[in-house]
Image (cartoon, rainbow, N blue to C red; front, side, top):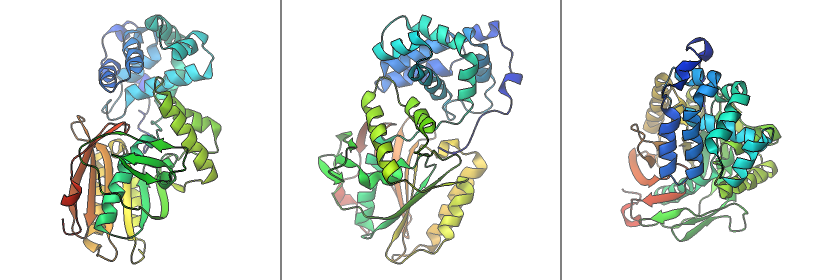
Length: 369
């Protein structure tokens, strides 16, 4: 992900103590959303965390003083990852046992953990989320098959907010896209989202080159950094954790190229670089733009608009977005390609790629669409 969005000095901006007993909202609200996404255990952790905040004054103060949009900054997921990391580390036996069994006195165990590790939780939450959910690559691969139908050529893949760069290895994973296989059938990483609606026409996707950018790229050879990624996986979804571990193993054999930098500065330079004839320059962003401020978002849109005006049939440009809607009520998979400049809403998706509701029949997508 992109951008360290932690407040400059959150503990100096809010009082601690009894005030933390008052309802604060973000953890419980996210808990309700998580429950609708099928993770009852993580929902229970977040709801218990809300009730037990009075036992963790530094964490409570951090949340109370958060200077930006708590949902956009994924503050609840930061909290959840901090607790999951403590459980995985094993330093708090009762917490570790709770995360192994998914049952017990959740309020007591979570409250005890928050009291014992308040400073560590608050410190961990100040770091921007680093997630690299491989399940989202199914939607991206599906969009790439559509793109291949629009521009029958290889693509230079570029990712904004690439984290560890695992999405850049998407051609090394095996997919079932609505009944159609894609990717590498021999891959240990197998991604088969629940599918509704018509499936995209199967086409071979060819990646000519791949690289990305992130403000703080994760080195797949750094065990501690990889452990942080693992902590962001929901604890009651071990299949996601297994898939992430397999993707990290592939990345260690084929290290992704991720530049350290700012999206708003890196993107225009990439768009201005010479583009080979017969290659579609393709930019992907998955749950990355929500971390940009308004100025940076405007710079991204301006860069795409200007580059799209220069695109030709021989040197096309494409943009694939897997992002929340502005109202944060749905995740849309959007494909924009130039020179025609048409944006296609291909699908509505689960935030982590568990299901895809495909909208566009294959017959409605053509080079003249």
